Image (cartoon, rainbow, N blue to C red):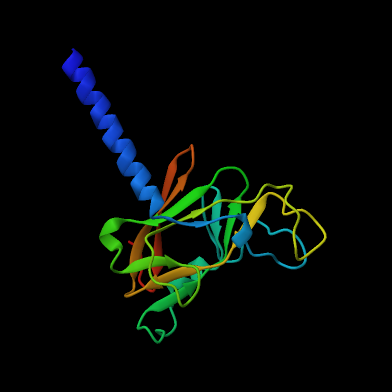
Length: 175
């Protein structure tokens, strides 16, 4: 019994260390890196958006029918505004087997990153571009960089909650 308990403790410790090491490699976007409208708090739902749990990717449905032209680096950049509901942080990630094809980017110049953690503002946070509070939604800029068209799964992991998975069409239909 003592051996089984000792093995279980080692397994839990190794798993915790691996999870902590993986989280260190994740790019973090906190409240200080938000974007604002300049007029009023952001709404959760945006035009042509895809909603996944507490996250809304504005304009991402448009990527299904066209990606435009490739940038100077040979990759497509699909810009999307991200709205995150106040409450828990979320980590958006691309499955490992697709890391050579798609990644998240904060700007058109960014390298591919497999995951980004978004930490929304407190609803009471004062805005800097208008005379109100941030409210229930924090906005972030960014997008996706792709080496090739495809239908890619994205995971949205809610801190302390569940993980949502959605397949997104980037210039190629999801079947």
